[in-house]
Image 1 (cartoon, rainbow, N blue to C red):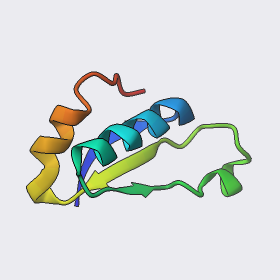
Image 2: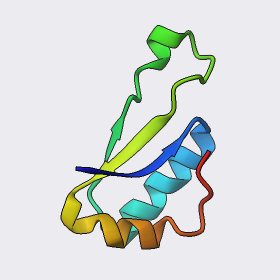
Image 3: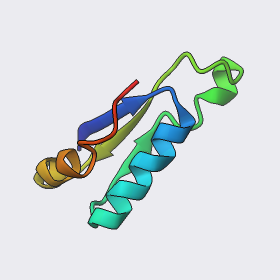
Length: 68
């Protein structure tokens, strides 16, 4: 798995997930439940991981979303 996207913004994360689903790219959101540890302050970014063979398609699908 390779990292395709990283953000602290839950809206951007949701949008990125939607775009990947629409493009038919398999993905996994790492660190989704870290908020239980950090107290929902948004310090730790959530990462979207995709299989290595789909990374190019994932980056193309996410081209319009700015990380952060």
